[in-house]
Amino acid sequence: MNEQRNNNNKKNYLIFALICVGLLLVFNAFIVPAVNKAKIKETNYSFFLKQLDAGTVTQAEIKDDSIVFEVNDSGDKKLYSTVKIEDPDLVERLYKNGKVDFTGKIEHENPIVTFIFSWVLPIILMVVLWTVLMRGMSKRMGNSMAFGKSNAKIYVKAQTGKTFGDVAGQDEAKEALVEIVDFLHNPQKYAEIGASLPKGALLVGPPGTGKTLLAQAVAGEANVPFFSISGSEFVEMFVGMGAAKVRDLFKQANDKAPCIVFIDEIDTIGKKRDGHIGGNDEREQTLNQLLTEMDGFDGKRGVVILAATNRPDSLDPALLRPGRFDRRIPAELPDLAGREAILRVHAHKIKTDPDIDYNAIARATAGASGAELANIINEGALRAVRNGRQTVCQSDLEESVEVVIAGYQRKNAVISQQEKEIIAYHEIGHALVAAKQKDSAPVHKITIIPRTSGALGYTMQVDEGEKFLLTKEEALARIATLTGGRSAEEIIFNSCTTGASNDIEKATQLARAMVTRYGMSSSFDMIALETVNNQYLGGDTSLACSPETAAHIDEEVNNIVRTAHEKAKQILRDNINKLRELSHYLLEKETITGEEFMAILNKESAPEELSNDLI
Ligand code: ADP
Ligand code: MG
Ligand code: ZN
Image 1: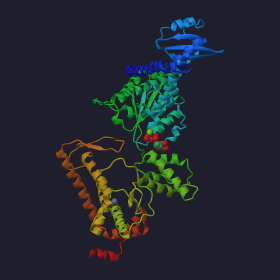
Image 2 (image 1 turned 180 degrees about the vertical axis):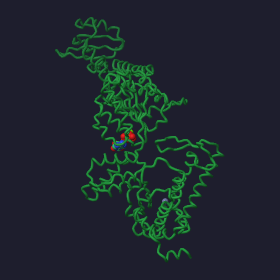
Image 3 (image 1 turned 90 degrees about the vertical axis):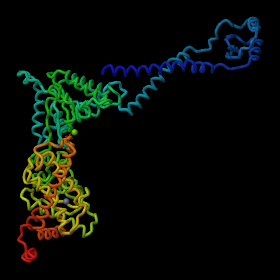
């Protein structure tokens, strides 16, 4: 690797040297003579003879093809040159004219001027050219011509001003990091027992769970230098440059020990080396250098490497082995208590009403990351300003939850009455199927106000507490609820619309996961038919089975959804009066709460409706 870099350097210096020599030659061959010649006036041979006869020529230099002579025109000395004509009497003429000194070379070149023009000026020009060129190049290529010198600016001591108090939830992660900070402050406490500091800790988790924030908090809490760099900053255009940067970073860190080095998004350089021909040489060299450097330094000196990634499965195993990143600190999506705490931390920065129910907001945001929760609080504050209020109230936050989930309200979307009716039946279909199944979460809110995400309406269900497991019954109930919208359209209007596309997608996804990953189907046992690729980034899957099995899976998925669909339709048929009543109510109100919904649902049906039902 070293050699590679040196080779690169050598090549560059060679080019530089060649340019220098070239420029010198050009100067000496053309420019210097030209400058000197400028002082010499060209004349014809007869002028020379005339001057010779007049006796004004004081010096003459006879060259191969020209004669340069000096004329003393009453004290004013001038230089002339003329072509040399084949003249056998020339020497005699000169000799006769005794004044001419024709043995010496005429000193018509000013030595200082010559020196400046042939040596100093070219060198100055070259240096200027070189700097301008380099500057332009490094701008375009991000410093790749800096010959392996890392840009020291990137590793500034961070002044983040963040502390662990700014990080809510994530208690396990905080605990692990607090220990590292403690070690840097009191190394002797650990040394007495003989414990050595973990060399590295890897923060893993989905985007927006506070990994970068945790590292910033460590920087704020540990009173030691903190070097922060993003993995992408090691990615260079030329092979070996990234490696040189790694080397430089660790050199700086070693000089400043005890200190912390934080590499964000380490997956950019830490990807598995797959041995493909024509693989990314530069990245592999950078990774190799990182591995070497992490082995190279002494854990007792107190250099701790923190790194963050949301793709731990793509990291090279060599990077993850003990002795390098021996600690893995998960930063998972926050649970109910965590969400509430995060909401409170961020609400601290804004003015709120005193009686805000953060727990309710936290319950409505299952699966939201810390970044999304921070965004919800900010959206709420913006809404308060928009409405001309001084403080943020509960409804601001509730509305902003929906903004984050489904986008802004499209207040002036024009939807025909007939379509509105279909949408109302669709949503009540979902809600009714949910309410009539015992394994389903309670309905929180139903609305038919369109949103910028494209949703024409939606039914929000909110669990009472935190759920960690999903039973088979709950999964089936959820699929039935998802098919409830389409079922209502079919029963009432005897046709179906495109409005169910999102429901279909979600129902299929869940049914598929039940068959391929959760072992919840009747025809397969506990067999993993699919593997999850990016656990933290969307969780896309790839099939791991024969084509025949794949066909069988599709059939099984179809069966699950079909059964759920039938069940939903049956529930709606059994409650058709409630379906109509609730839909009309929703059509009128546009948004109803879960309580309103349940009140109408639990109300005794009017007798005439009952008799209608019996007919
Ligand atoms: P990532 O895990 O993708 O690096 P960040 O650390 O950049 O996520 O988090 C983005 C933002 O989300 C933070 O600046 C912070 O405002 C908010 N946030 C995320 N997690 C938390 C948390 N646990 N406590 C408080 N704020 C958080
Ligand atoms: Mg980050
Ligand atoms: Zn729907």
